[in-house]
Length: 455
Ligand code: 5AD
Ligand code: SF4
Image (tube, rainbow, N blue to C red; front, side, top):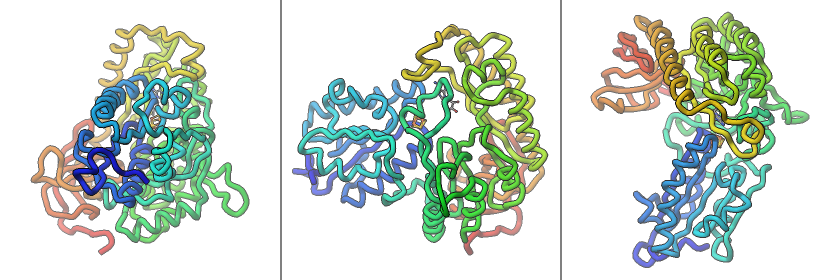
């Protein structure tokens, strides 16, 4: 295998530099790539200029993701010109979307591969000296078989499915990640068990549409998402189970019951709505309308009254009128979100909306609308988070607070960041009395008796 390069003459140990764009799925795939590269003897380089191998794990969800990536990609091109022996590898969703032209448009690329091919990176490195390697199958394997270098010792991501069978008209994901495939329940539980033995206390189950999990499995391995939640929660040492992201159409009573009845299943659901107007939801092909979405919110709140709901909202979808947008604003106050990610609509090549609908909301109108939306989201979140003041919350400690290293920071069950003074180790779960809230975070003080998970 070639791990050499001009630098290898001066440094005995090959160095890699990996940059990740996009969602948690990509962040997790990057943990796998790091684990694999380090098992092959590579060490991380501080900067691209020092690296023998430059890797990008890319995203293409919106035009802005492409633009962000292009800046760093240009730097790789410059480095390749200066040091032709450097190996440039580009994986992930953007690479997949460019599969037919990547080597001709970007001749400095040695290896290009889609998100389903992450587990073959070692093989690509071995083959790359013969010819550029491109691999873009949409039914590749789970990266769960690779070694792993976890970003955090006590928290882990676990892939439960890949791909997506939805046809949301704005979304490029189904075309770059393929049809949905679920990982057998036993595999998921075995991975979580290994992680727990390794000190992990919180897992986040990952998939493009987690709650349609299991429908493609057959025979003995067939299981529902709610069953999976139960099985993962039962693993010794696992104190918290989260998941990202469900589709509202697939949240059934058994999932709500899991949040109500299983202590480990966190009191938070990220429930992407995308829009508040039934007309726009229809054009987006979300398969629910405003009333059905709000019915679901009501059912969730009946089952789990104190739960946090967060969402994704797109502003400026083709044809969005002032009235449609007003429906998105009012959805935020009616659904009482604890937080929301807001996005400007971005037409994507190959998607139904990108190909057939004119991106007709003027940029300045999109700008005004997103600003107005952010204000309503913040005001609603501020009111919602205030409910925690005066309560005691179990906080999973992540480490020193990013803004004040004399304090600790961690998350509640509801997925809200809390800062507090005190001493506790990352991974401990400690009770914190909440004294203060903002629209995005809480602060407080440790209650008298810390409980230490795993002690
Ligand atoms: N334009 C804007 N936002 C988008 N999203 C997905 N595709 C687009 C697009 N073309 C948003 C959705 C999704 C989140 C991950 O990104 O809100 O839930
Ligand atoms: Fe980006 Fe979507 Fe791919 Fe995640 S799945 S990296 S958000 S395009």
